Length: 486
Ligand code: ADP
Image: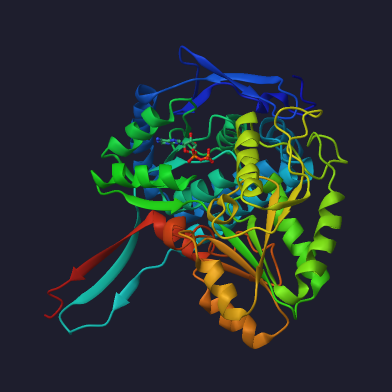
């Protein structure tokens, strides 16, 4: 497939290790989910190349962490500038390999780049402390780079999940070995090309592409050189990686699954709540870990909410994300479309009503699923308990505030949640009552580089972005300086 790129050299099919483009002996296919077309045959690497990348990162780290923070900052800033200068090409690559609509891809490139910009600034502000003590000694705290960082990232945000990790890692003085998802390696490789052009020294940013995620993951977790693992993906894989990381007691950050509730109270601005639920539910075709997964609506406005929500969802335009008219793209794979349909079938067979959609859009291709709304749903259904990761909105009914909080918390996940109410007291009570790392009150567009993104419970540990986002990449070292008295 020929993408109309201004700079076709951004499209890479080799991995990037120690500043070299590496082919390996096998390749895997990257397909456009909207059309099924082959986009690229990418180097399929495994454990041995991962080890090479780790070694390169370990060596590159030595001089990088010793450089003045200002220099690290300037290089990151140059990387940011190059990403933004190539925003349109990067967005095209992303939509082609991942499916999300072009407007969302442009948004993700800017969002992803903002982490590089933010941490370029933070690089200069990694302060230590002097702790007051007795006259003959000073207690000093210094912050040091944690070391080589392994970053395993998913396909739903092929660019931003990388920059959100690589930005703070490089700012702190670390080197990274990135394992992107096999569905979306092209966005990762384009970022590596731009890091290279920005002058970020070889070995600091490595991208190991491959389909044997288990082997690459094992090489990363087995290595004593890798001091930190940062992972975004599913909860089962996160648990597995946590176990694997225990053997070498790595630092870990985990951004895992979500099961976001949106709680709509009867005092809410209904139109605003409908718009919020719609925006969050169908963004990226429902394939984000903070997408609304369960719509909880107070009994007295349940029917009114459904009428407005169904009418709005029916206006979404399903199609190829490369067309500007499209507002809902395909799912990432045919398997995803099947999984989503299984969940809908599970609900329907237990008594749910399909108010909209409820089926694949086969005339468009095997990855397309119609915007779907389910009513008469209950808490024992899979659509309540599991992360749907598709354009399906199950709408549940609750009676009062206490029941809403209980329903919201009735899950092992705790990433994002949303509340719609005009009652200030209720907004506070519910915000503090829900067990979620992030709460949006009358707002669903809650993420940016300036806030701490992360979850509670089985949604993970650690925070990404904001002033807190650097913490996971630095060690706190205490130095006791004694013998001061003459
Ligand atoms: P998703 O459901 O979003 O694909 P996964 O958790 O399966 O979530 O994938 C997220 C990332 O983790 C991808 O880069 C994938 O290749 C990788 N991955 C999957 N299984 C493993 C594993 N056993 N070890 C290491 N990485 C893995």
